[in-house]
Length: 537
Image 1 (cartoon, one colour):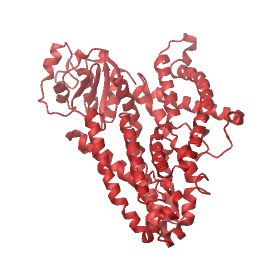
Image 2 (tube, rainbow, N blue to C red; image 1 turned 120 degrees about the vertical axis):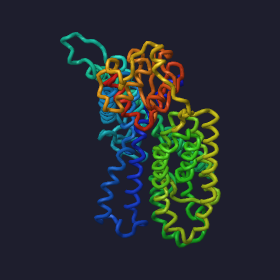
Image 3 (cartoon, rainbow, N blue to C red; image 1 turned 135 degrees about the horizontal axis):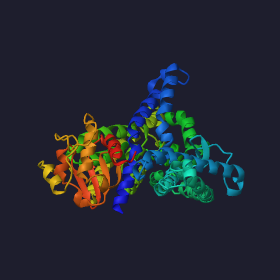
Image 4 (cartoon, rainbow, N blue to C red; image 1 turned 90 degrees about the vertical axis):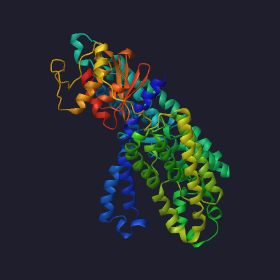
């Protein structure tokens, strides 16, 4: 079971690698289009604003299409063969699934309790995926459909059809089966998911009358619902609709800014309805603590390269409030940590509320500064000063709690690879004992396969394959951010750690028949060549 969990976690990590760059672009773009910070040059309609708006629109691509991105990325790690073709099969099947939902709700939306004429987003429960108006099922829908199609691919891709039906074999046959399966999946979704969304609306009424306790519960659930894509349904009615205040908290706060700036009365008295938008504090103070814990628990050799991942995604969270990059680095690898994260985020927001910090605090530092610190700093600066000691205290709490849990339960968070120094040994003796051929790149041309030895990664992939026992010993292969994950038939044919280090890897981690060859950030290039060698193209 652990092997399957690790394999799934590795597959989920593939799209996460895109988040860091996308987050940096969003952060810079948001900063450059915020008039309060940049001045008149960033006013709407200026050439400066228009140029940066174009760049910002592109930066949001990854985050606006997360369900589609994860659906397509999952086969890279989980398809047993022809993963590229499986990605295509998942893409077209997932789009087909959403087209089915669109057609069903267009015809029978009222009977199913769905107002399909509403605009997408906010509290409508609708979303646009690949240009298709459909139910907002978030990550749940994407992962379920992707998993179904991957299972169909693994089962039916190699199905042999009669020669006269050969044109329908392979990916075409998989899609034919998936097309039929998507119909009941769509029907089941439109019957069940609106009920889930309705339950969210009922719960919102309970939050309103709960005061500070309501803030605690709200923030906890907002974090906890992110993987399911239901957090939008939770917060949108509060932020943008009339659940708490007419016009929504964002609009009401912006409208009342002049009055709030002119008064020195407590913000909690002037605008108590602003308390619920407290979800951003963990983004500013919690994420650095998490990143610090990841760095501290990483193996020393991995810390330098880990920083290249942690620094941009931490800055993205702090400045822009986009936490998916760092949250998805551990969400599927160590789910208990995500629950702890949600709890600490709720506790942090509760403390901020208790000292009177209310306002628009759902985003990152750029948004908070625009709506709060810059316009209200002169009249409410003393209230805002309380943010610093509370926030830094929770940064420390996050760090020590995450560090303890990672070490206590040996969670395989980023950077936790084996790196103990082992004396290099000769793999020649191992190979002779096991009746294996000499490695690619060998000085003996009679023993070396006909490969392009000028391609260092191909040589490395071939040597790894050799030390794993050859093609016939490979069951399946995937990778995470630094490791090539391979399941083998016979673990006794796999060489020792020192042998893998002698060919240029950082070693191998063995767990029964599950092997993890530690390569580094070039693992995707090595994986591509490894797939070629074992016939997985």
